[in-house]
Image 1 (cartoon, helix red, strand yellow):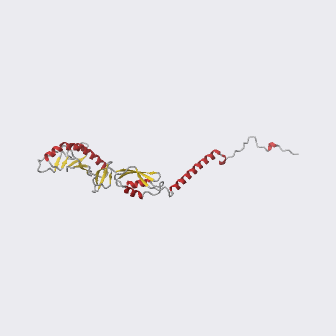
Image 2 (cartoon, one colour):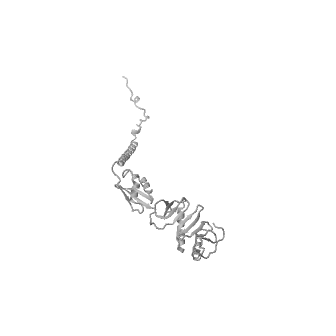
Image 3 (cartoon, helix red, strand yellow):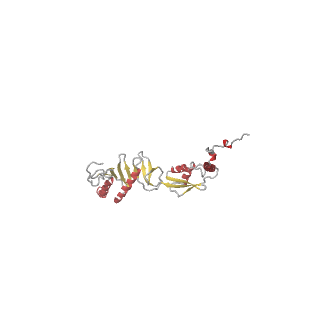
Length: 278
């Protein structure tokens, strides 16, 4: 009877057994993927819930809450401006569109809009603080605020005295700054500025409330506008006492000035001017 040797059926001693491989046999990777899918599922459910909440017929907006009472803007204007911009409910309303609609109102400089739980919008307004009138090159009138910005609005009656500024487009901040500088200097002779004009050639002209026009010309390094104004102030009181009425003081000369529009009945003042005017 034949006998089989067991050694011939067994694996060679040096051959290794193959280990299982593939995604299902990597527990660490499987756990990581499970965590990722779980986070995505939670985020998807949250997004779906939020979307459903936003489109629910509930949560209507019922009131507009002002953080401080405006002085120039009426509640009727605010209601009219926001009526078309406020679309949707508490969650879906476009705050930027609402802000833009409010900032189009004549006296509103800036507006901030936020949601105010449970059914309102909180609005903070910054109104224009008018400090001067503005006359454009085409003759149209506007207003200037304290920041030197030109805006269009109807000035109420009884608003008091406001100087008029005239100059090229974009020059309002410079004109407002010069107005403050010149006004401070003229307090020494008790005069107030009625108009400040900057011509297209960048020449400066000032008209006082007593009707006198001061021609200052262009600002130059060797003869600044401040120096010319100081010269005018130094002689103004004595000139008025001597010549009476005058219309124009031309200060564009480097060493003196010329007066025009002197009352013919008054003693004629000498013309003090040398050099070319600027």
